[in-house]
Every structure is written in structure tokens, then in C-alpha cells.
Image (cartoon, rainbow, N blue to C red; front, side, top):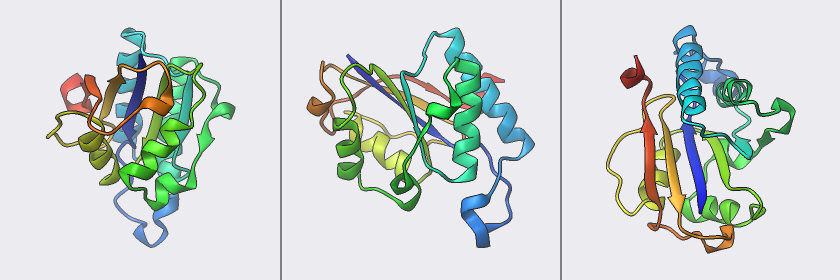
Length: 164
């Protein structure tokens, strides 16, 4: 069994779109990231690997999750294409190249791409992913190279508003 966890970055400041890459989390985003990652810790959902967009708001979210889940921040892998945009097929290619010893891999990024990934990885998904929403997708495979679109099963979805 392999698990992909998609995390949309937490709530960022509503200004600075002229320098979108460097937008930081607002206070509510910091709180949401702590709350969601604490819930994951309570459920014993721990990353073997964290991969993130290098955009400041995504990396800040990933670092909060890493701290709360006991993952070394320096091991967060930054992938520029997650910020710049990927098709689902391109995202699946990243997944297929993961080392097989990894069981649970967290990805941190942005909408609308992460909603598209959820829609296309899962056999059925029509929800939205608000900021800091976190969704677990399990694949009944032993090797990452066997992951295919529309074969994932949703194991959980955490939305900050519902955790309060």
C-alpha cells in the first residue's frame, strides 16, 4: 500500500500578488497548519518524505507539518514545477519515480492543481480543497511505478474549519 497526502498551503496574506512567490502565511494560516498537522500526528499519519513547492507559503506550511510530525526540515525536497504548474500526468510521473521504500509521501502546493490532482488520482472526488485542506489517497500497489490515475482511494480529508 502506498499513500500520497496532498496538502494545499495554508492561508496566505491577501496582498503581494505582484510577488506571488514570496507571499507568506497569515496568522490564521499558521494556526491552521499547526491544527491539521497535530490531527495527523494524533492519527499517526507520518511522512516518509515531504515534497513541496518552493513558494514561501507552501514551504512555511511544509515546515510546520515537518516540525509537528518529527520530520527533518532540511530533508524537504523542493520541486519548482509544483509552483509553476503540472498536469496530472506530469504529477503522476513524479509519483512513479519515488523510491519504493517510501510508504507515505506528503506533497505541499497550490490550487487549482491540487484539486485537479485529487479529482484525477481518486476514483471519485467532487469536494473542494480550501487552504490547508489535507487529503490522503491510498493506492493498492507495492511499487510507486504502478500508480495510475483514478485508482486511488480517499483515506481521509482534513479541513481546518472542521477541526475547530
